Image 1: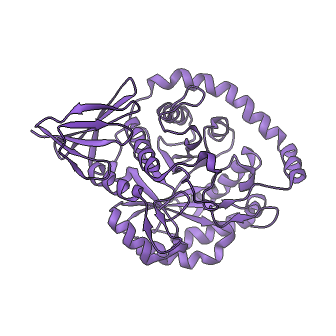
Image 2: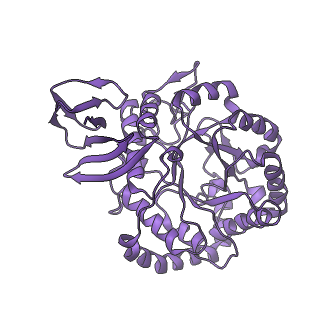
Image 3: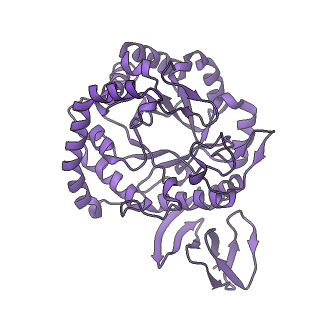
Length: 417
C-alpha cells in the first residue's frame, strides 16, 4: 500500500485520506460513474421497496451461518485453540494484496484449518485497482496456491470508501470482472462473492447488481454495520437491521447478476477505552457487556430473517473490536463466552418464528426436537419461571429464580416436554 494510502496497524484499516486535493481530483474523474450510481438508485430503489414484502425466506444452514473473522498473522496455535473452544465451523480470513509475499504463510494457516469452511476476503490497494494486469497476476497466484483450501472468495471490500482504493463503482466492476474472467477461464469450480459495500449505502450495491458488465456473483457480500445507530434494533431512515437485510435480499433477488446468497462478511461494535485500537471515535464505542448483548442480538435478528447465509463477526483477536484482547497475553472479553454459548445452542437449530410486541422480542427454534425460546426486551420487565422452563443466561449460566428478569441480555428458555 503506497502513499497517500497508509495502513493503520491498530484498527486494521486504512487511515482516512489526508491529501484532499488528490481525493477531490479522483472524485471528479469518477463523476460519470457516480452519476450512474445515483440514477440507478432512483430506478431500483422504488421497485425493490415495493417487491420487499413478496420475498420468501430461505432455509438457512445454521451450522454455516455462524462465522468468525480470523487473522492468520496472529499465529496458528493461538487461533486453533480459540476456534476449537468456540467450536465454530466457518471462518473468514483477510488477505491484503500488498502483502502477496505472505501467501505461503497464509497457505500454512489455511492447511491448519482445512476441516473448516473458509471464506477468503481479498483486500485491494490502489495499485491493484488501477493495474488490472497486476491484479490478474496476483489472483492467478492466489487461486493456484490456495486451490481446494478456500470455499468462497470475496473479491474486494469496502468499495464505497475512498481510503480503501476505489473512487467509483465502475472501478470496482472492472476489478471484479478481472477476477471473474480468470475464474471462468482457469478455475471454474471457485466461488466468488462481492461487492462488499459497507454500511447502509445501497445505492452503491444497486450499481454493482444492475449494470452492463458481463459478470455474475455466486452471492452478495455486505459489511452491514449498524454500530453508529447504537442498538441493532434501532432504525436508520426508518429501516431497522431486519428491514435492511430484507431490502438487500430483495435487490439480489431482482438482479440477474447473482445467486440468491447473502453474506454479511463484517460487522461489530467498537469497544470503549481501547483507543487507538478502536476503529471509530469513543462516541460510538460501547462497554464490554453492551458489546456482548449487541453481538448476540445482531446474530439473532439476522438468523431470524432467514435471508442471510452467514454473518462473520469481525473479529476473533482484536482489542478494539473483537472477542479477544491480546495486548498483554490472551484475555477473553465477555463476548467470547457469549459467542460460544450462542453457537452451542443454535448451530443445529431450526428457526420457527420471531414475535415482537412493544419492544419485547421472542425467537423460537427447534433444537434436537426441543422448543427453545430466546427472550429480550428494550424495556425491562419480568416473566414467571415456569416449572417446565429450563433457563440459561446469555453466557450459559442456569437461572432458577422464580421470577425471570427480562432485559437487554437475551436469555435462553428451553421448554421441557
